[in-house]
Image (tube, rainbow, N blue to C red; front, side, top):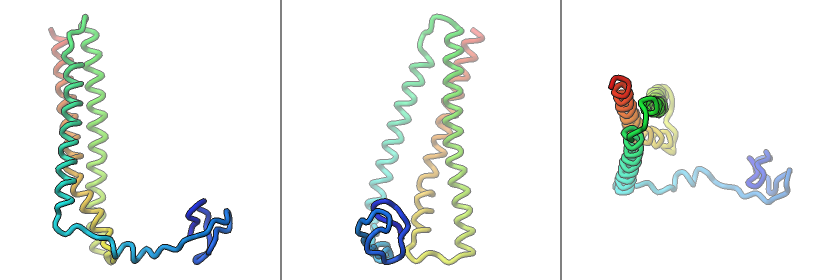
Amino acid sequence: MFCNHCGAKNPDGAVSCLACGQPQTQTNWSSVNNNTPRSSDGEHSARGKATAIFLSVILYLVELAIVLLVLFHNYASKDTTAIVSLLVVAYSMIRAHLFGEGALSAKFFLDLSKLIQRNAVEPEDGSHEDITVLVRRDLPYAWAGVFFHMALAALAAINLLLALLL
């Protein structure tokens, strides 16, 4: 067991911490996990999903507006337009890469989860199931981020080509 105050290791059942002397409280974790109320009707998760979708859409719209303003501003020279377009391409590709890594990591986690489920005993508290549900729920958002930022990069690349050719 570890101290609730300083984090020092103490023997199980210690009344006070050997390092800092603070009184210790015992928590019965099995009763905490088993008595946690779970949403059975799905109302809470549906509201949370709607909120997540709404916030994602708002963030993407704001990001799109900023990128469009930067890309299609009437700069004084072709060089400035080309540099700004290259920066937007770089920014968008970096963001797409990050979202892609998140999506691939989630996919690998789900594959690993399937292997664990086949070869191991499921935890009694159902925590493994809760985690895989969260990952499955968030995976489409990661792919949406990949495609959104790839589209921004393509738009910036087209703007770059137009600036260089015209």
